[in-house]
Amino acid sequence: MLTHLNMSLDLSNSFTWDDYIARIDGHSADPKCFKQHIIPPPNNFEVNSLLEAVDHRSAAHDVPLATLSIDNINGASVLLDGNPNISPFLGSGTGRRSMMSGIVPGSGALRRFRAAAFSLGRVVELWGPRVRVRLVGTDDRNDCFFLVDSDQIRPYPSGHDLQPPFGYMHNHLVWGRTLKRAIEDAIFASPSWFIKPPPYPEGNLFKLGDKLEAVDRRNAQLICPASIGAISGQHVLVSFDGWSGAFDYWTRFDSRDLFPVGWCQAAGHPLQPPGPQASRPKLSISPSNNHDSHLSCNQQNSNSLSSSTHTSTASSKPRRRTGGSSEKA
Image (cartoon, rainbow, N blue to C red):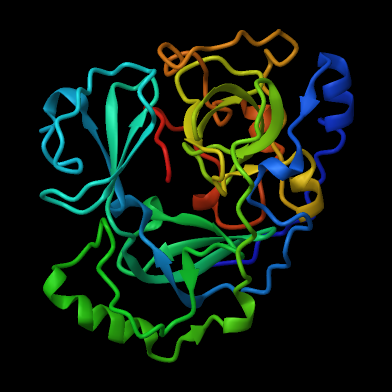
């Protein structure tokens, strides 16, 4: 049964930004660094309503540099040797496929982005100004989180074709039948619930060591205290406070997964406390060796995770996951 998330959770007894920053002599990132509204927008969506959403899993994949042909980036020969000094973004490809390409700093891989594919989705939970969306024809393993002011969700019907999502459980030949069944007697998200995205920042204004709140991409329902661990051109390394391991991630400075200090409190969204090593000083990490230096904040002990447990279904509780990090466009 799909339920509305109770957002009355109070974590103030376990963590406050003011006390934490004073204790570690830290500094918050300037709100101008973020592509976020100064005041978090209201969430008027309803559980079970249908909308159109970008299928994140079908939009990007990593390719080891050694396997790449070098004639499909603007028709030019480019040396791709994993050098962290190479600019993270190489621009649009005009060869065999039309896509954006970018080197993930420190990973020895090229991330290639196909054109965003929209699919039909259903709102299954509300988390402050975020909605958890399950794409029609998939299970809860493929759920995605979107801000209500994201340009990656839109009302149904938009008039554009909808594609079967990555992980579609049926034969693609019956996709039309799946759509028809889904919209029968369905609740459709009102266009008024969708909010215009915020403006882009003027540029990458982040500074090394800036504190912020960031989505844990290994468990996207969690937002955790984090720091800017490194900066490379248009990208920043998100390093979760109190954890050391391999789950930090590089992302663009204007990622919608990054929030200023205090955003969760203002938005009514749970914020995870830092890990047990939070009082220790963080070392500056170079782009060439950072990808195995930090641990995802979702691998907290059971006590810290239980503080964010909500009253929705058991399947949506924070789950431990293993594996490497990934980057979103």
